[in-house]
Length: 65
Length: 275
Ligand SMILES: Cc1ncc(C[n+]2csc(CCOP(=O)(O)OP(=O)(O)O)c2C)c(N)n1
Ligand code: SF4
Ligand code: SF4
Ligand code: SF4
Image 1 (tube, rainbow over the protein chains, first blue to last red):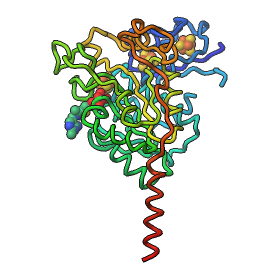
Image 2 (image 1 turned 180 degrees about the vertical axis):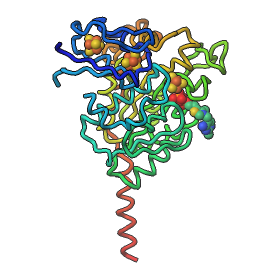
Image 3 (image 1 turned 60 degrees about the vertical axis):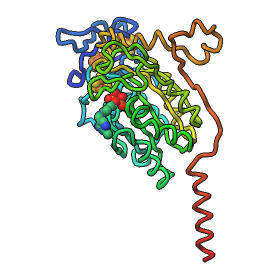
Image 4 (image 1 turned 90 degrees about the vertical axis):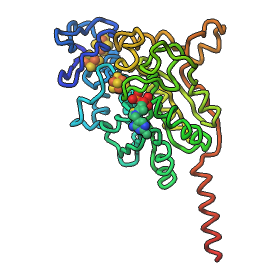
């Protein structure tokens, strides 16, 4: 996997922002509303989920600086 | 990148107190990344806030933090900057805190052009106290204090501070998070009073009452109503109706207050020496 998406479920508040704006439908909300990585192969490493998460709960690894 | 943000957060204070989807956390992330790229240390940076949800940023940001009284952050920040001009002083305020109860401080701090960066999170409402309208709530919008819609027009707070003398004025949104970081970064490095208005969502106090049911829906509103100042200059006025401008809106070169004040100190010391 090129990019490693890590979710901190302790901090995630299930707001849905990262899911709504992911350009590749990588993320989805589980039964509890918290984010789950459904389709990691499709991730393009744009980091928009990380940058727009109000709770510092999602991080995308493997992105070149 | 995330590691950089983490280094500047009081992680034992997380999860923070803000509601799910609140724009405040996105603004904090952009601010922390901008500061990290500038390499500012925790010790040489002070974040001053007043009262409100946005003011609670100070609970999680790991700089020297100073939470003051409602609307008065800029007064405290001015005293701090005059006493310790070498510090980087950043104020985070809300639309009620900064443009309502603190509006007078805002215009006079802009007039002095003191080297303070002010980030005003405009979520169109008093979030903390449950949804009363502020001077930046748009006409027609609903609030607990305007159940039939807000009657009078709002300020354009960027025009207000520009008119009052701010030497750097910019606007962005939490949807446009990369542009937001860039605007904050430019504001931080500008010498003089610099001001960034951040259009953000308060899903709890504003969205629910104004037919925007989710935080993402509110961010789509930001996406659809923002026009960059650059693009706007090429558009006919009818295309700009109901839209707001983003990007750097004003920049000017004026004398900075603490530097001017140094001359007063030098003059007074000289005269003191003569006696
Ligand atoms: C002197 C004083 N008056 C009123 C209040 C009550 N009060 C607390 S927060 C607030 C409004 C904050 O609104 P805003 O600045 O828009 O911040 P937000 O909560 O939306 O981030 C008010 C009126 C107070 N704490 N102190
Ligand atoms: S980095 Fe971009 S593509 Fe990957 S999950 Fe996040 S938003 Fe989606
Ligand atoms: S944006 Fe953050 S808090 Fe919201 S659902 Fe995604 S990970 Fe959770
Ligand atoms: S009331 Fe509004 S501004 Fe305050 S934390 Fe909740 S969403 Fe954010």
